[in-house]
Image 1: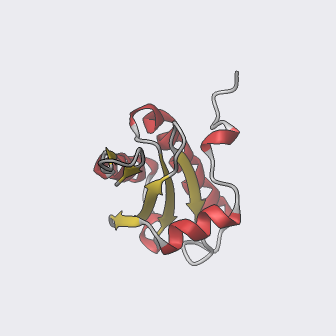
Image 2 (image 1 turned 90 degrees about the horizontal axis):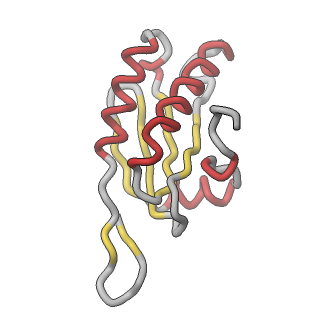
Length: 125
C-alpha cells in the first residue's frame, strides 16, 4: 500500500468546497487559514487551496501542499470526522518546512471535538 493520502481522505468535488466556504467553522494562524465542518462519514477529509497569491512559483506552492498532506496523513487518525480545507497565506511561502509543519500541527490540535446533537443522531462542531 502506498504511503500517500488515500482518495477517500481528500475533498475533490466543487460542491464540497463550496459548502465549506458558506457554512463552516474557521480559525487560522500566521501561515494558514482553516475551515471545517462535520462530514457525516467515519473519517476526516482534506482539501487544499493554495493560490498563486501565496507564491508565483509552482514549485513553492507544491512544496506547501506536500507538507500539508503529509501532516494531515499523520494526524488523520486523531481527527474527528470532518471536512477540512486549508488555505495558505502569503507568509507561508518563504518559511522553512519545519516551521510550516509546526504551525499546521498546532492547527490540527485546535480542531474541536464533535459532539452529538441531543435527540437527533447527528453531530455538530
